Amino acid sequence: MRKSYAMVFDGDMVKAVIPNELARAIMKVMAEENLDLPSACKVFVERANSGSEKFKRDVMDQARKLHNSELMKQINSARATIRAQSYNDGHQAGYKKGYDSAKAKYEIWYFCDVCNGRLTVSPNDGDHNAVIESLKEKGWGHASCHNM
Image (cartoon, rainbow, N blue to C red; front, side):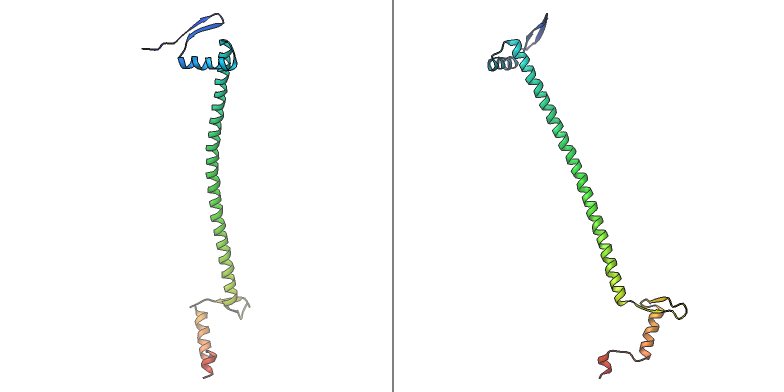
């Protein structure tokens, strides 16, 4: 059996053939609120529209959640970048501090006879080899070896 629905406009009223489920929903409003049919229809429409408002709020809430989720991804990415940069900065600062400390403690240098500027003796260069030869010529060695 094919269902057909019809609406007939009669002045300020509309005569309609509607689905049973809709008719029952309107009759439920009539019973709950003790209303006549036109008033129950108005209440039913208001409730349906308020449902639309709820739907709109739900959609907006979901959009906000998605936006916040995307925002959190961006924030977490920024945090990771800052963390990595901070680590690199700290690593470089620590390396420089350790290098400078070791340099001050172990660097071998002497003053130039001409300009009195500082000269650093680097491993395996000419100055380094000259220092080794000079120390050998002068008989430098371990104190324990000389005390035998």
